Length: 318
Image (cartoon, rainbow, N blue to C red; front, side, top):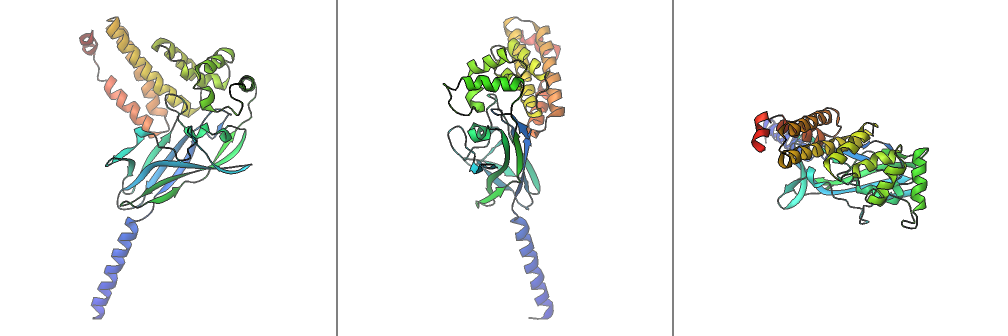
């Protein structure tokens, strides 16, 4: 082999090796807590951003685990069924053939928002009693992903969660929950109290100035008028940004439902249009202030639909 051919072969090998290495670069992930401070029995939301530096798409499986380090040691947080493998919310996932997954584009990134959902107990990890005790916790999330069917473990950065000791009105709620220990002789978690309408109602009625009462407003969903009033009152009390986003999303939905109700049952096109205008204002706020991209996109889609309505749209629906 001549020196020229040898050099060409070496360059070719180098290019192929470099290309393969770039294609096989592993993904990385970052974890943010929204917020990073909370109270016992109140969850926080997780915003996970996965980045793909490779030249090809890579996928994330429908599974996440949360490792926790506390003053009492290490543990893997579990969900409502005592599982440590929790599924990622389906609305932010895709389909890979018949399997749920999420595709991360080449040199791109994608957000995964683990929020509260309609029940406000959507972040299942806070069903674990150990995350509902005052203290400081170091959280690390693990995802599974890969390329061409291979699997790789993706571990996020560590994020610090502080669960504060309740005080003032919140301490009154904590004492009230403790007095119900006959029903739950253990640490109260979000799923223990917020999914029980009787307990949530008691907190709204007896401790209206507590942080817990703001959360309980999300369960006051008996009809559009009452739900709208409860959510607007809760939003006026300046909830944490992640709860605010959930409430804005719910409020917009209730206003839309109310608009359709008066249109179809009362035939009042003007009132229906006015309610939709209130929904538009809510969705504009959500689009402009929400931290998760999924909420900003949701709000933009809602605005595109509602702002296309004309007076004739309402008259034709009567």
